[in-house]
Length: 465
Image (cartoon, rainbow, N blue to C red; front, side):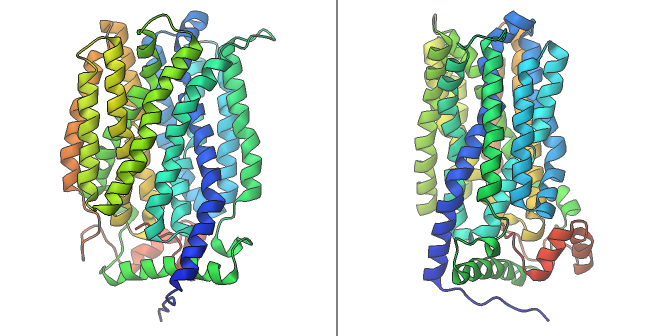
């Protein structure tokens, strides 16, 4: 017979949630900063690798994008293994392997090794982002997750702000027969390996393991998350299946929307340093400083629009507005000189970075907790293929036409299509929807991962609303 969790004391729950955010959010932001720098620092060494290794625009674009192929292939299994082994062990593993792969980039010798190592870096990092989202679902009630997610996502914007000056400064290091770009990869990758030891020491996988929470606070968090899942169950005839959700039109829609967001983000990320260099004779450090400006602006925008979306609730409208802003900025970047293009990209960054933060509550509200981790990983991995398409297409266009203008038009059109598509997305499942299954099918899914099955018996710990 089903047992129901007791309603937690709101004051105790609020105190517990505040403690969780103070304990884990600073570390998660730092992890995301280090992670994002290792992912995108390739943009600052494009000209150096072309000079030293003969890697041209098309090869650079393909190599930059291959990161996301490895990421997409391994993200879903990585996130399921996180459920099996726990967030503490698996996030530590992810950080160590991506740090090692980032350091190995210093020893690229040509196009082939460049392609291979970028693919390995993506495979090593796979599961990090949805793993953090899943961690929030185990530790925070739904009302607190949006704020926590906005703070966490600010890590990518902060990384974009500091990666330029840091990478630009490291490019000036020269010694031990290594070029500046090699020192950049070695030092920035090693930072990830150092940080993984602190992750192992600081994180726990479940609220019951947190000694820094009182027993009352632990019970309040667990009860709140169980109650959210029970409320969801009361409104549904059955449960969604991973395999049926793969064919669900809503999931396909989520994938397209996030693909459009990622397409624009990584189109700008990997090509912005090259666009800045067209503004004049700038040093690597100066390019890095200019590169920071759009991302600094986007941090303010992310917080501002998150606050407005929380006050005036209509998630689809806010995401659509951000995508329209991104489209307008990308289009305007094609209409003037290098300086005007840079200003337009600054405006576009307001849209595409805020859209990336405002998007996730939509699929989180639609998905059932028991398969949310896998489907969020699926959306993230397929959506992030935009990170493969954008740099690859830009590299091909530049090498064949001498301009990336066509790519910027493409980003603008895709963002507008996604802005229209977001109004078709549901933020909550309908009763008896076709993307749901029987208790027998639930058992078939949950027994594939013992830890997840244990969570089903002890109480749903991964609510994703």
